[in-house]
Length: 403
Image 1 (cartoon, rainbow, N blue to C red):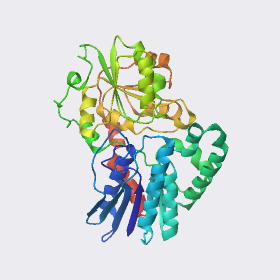
Image 2: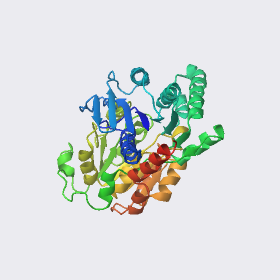
Image 3: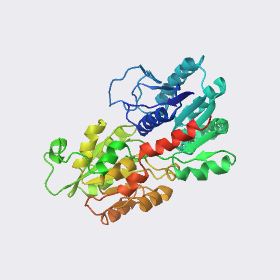
Image 4: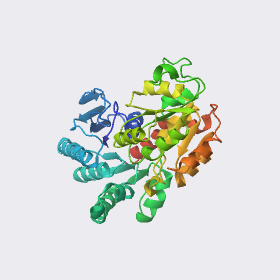
């Protein structure tokens, strides 16, 4: 069996899609028949302009090859991300032109990697497996200029229909997506393999994380010093429109300036806006830092009192399960989350010691924060139910079973 995996992000890049793809590759290698091969075509690290790490463009190891395509630099804007994807797509089409595959797997959050996978599968007459991590069409009204929304929705809607209908199986990363996809594609075969808890965080939940990490709250912060008794609240992840940090964090931090310090670790298209609003409002208890590698991030989690998560109050974010919640939950730390609809219900049903408030609502956030226990707790049941390696084994089994 010869399998092609298309993923825009792959380690050592930092993103939920990267870690998901890595786990899927390992699961496929464990389950593919003898004498099979797996080709991964991805990109060199490009998720964040402020995070730089090296990676080789070509790796070959037994029955696995990894092709990493260099891309022009970008800063998470829609135009420069589009140009970066076009560069990726051209190279993918060139690399696969004379290849023959049995199965093409495409994991996609912004639809176009799914469309690219459908095109490659059609050209080489392979079966197609799509892993959909977001509903791109629902995001379009917030991404496109007002005058181009109607045309853009029709154009990308047609691409979505073409790609989804070509797939033998479509996996949806959130059960909340069913309400969108099932009525539109009633004859399609859907599965629901979510994001999950990576082994390194599962090990933490099992008690094997080092008891004395190399940093502590005072050493890791530029606040000089962190006053004894002040809370340390950490957000780690993307800083984009989807997170809406510029709409919640300045007001929230201002209201808690006598009690807490906020650490934001990440980058994205709205980092500059967040920093601008913080400065305009005179907020001095928020520190914004660039992304860090996972071993350092584990230490930052360990040094924090509360983990913060927020999604913007837009309909397109009402169906998702943010990948970050799986990391957060495994630490056992108290979680303070601004989400709504399906996402809020999922959090409240599955995760203990979590304060869920209305997105972009400072008063709601403070009210729910008052109900949060500031003690760490065990969430071993959640971690075991959502171990990423177990979830990816099930997904790999679906893929291998297509032939």
